[in-house]
Length: 307
Image (cartoon, rainbow, N blue to C red; front, side):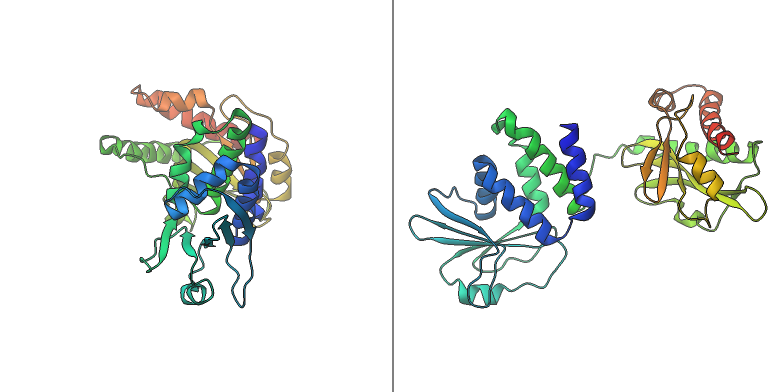
């Protein structure tokens, strides 16, 4: 399962356009009858029996829908796939495939078009997730990996319930981090002009820099990464303007420390995660000095290694 997930995750970095998603979806439809049934049923809101052909990029006249299907009764079906492209050809398809049933699936919402089933990839994934237990053991790992791949390709964002009672902890974290930065005695830390960008929908922290030799500087970010709810330091180690070669070499060979876990390469960055056992302590109501000490030792342990 882990290998399959890693494979599709790497695939999503290179194969993330509409044709790639269509190709992989088609291949899975051809490999798994159950997946094909769920996909087609979602698109057309009906259980289509006795499928004769399921063709990728079927050409007729000047049209080429992403998927073409027909059944033994001669009923035709076409599916048009989009991710971000809004250059749609509804009228053209209507003229060429007059009697076909038509579906359109994208990662954005589109107005209802007469004669078309308008669908979204996000809702399809939600439908697919509910049906994982309908697959055989042999299939389910592949289906889950496809699910993860498609989420990455369409930039699927899961919205979780809010707990506004804990929002104040974000301010507390920032205040503690500010004290840790000011009190650091390994190197003199400075905030830099990316500070306004230190807060995004995925990140909340500080951009910092320090001198590392004559006319040499190391720039890094430290803070909360909301996507997996962990604390990281990350360094853009491949850019000499942000990280000297000497420091980059140290980063690429650093073993896990007492407070930080195994480093995560993310070209051109390296992410340095706080160990889970210490992160758990930051999620409990405990002495503020103890929490401050964890963040301080985490940051300073990394900085010491980079000297």
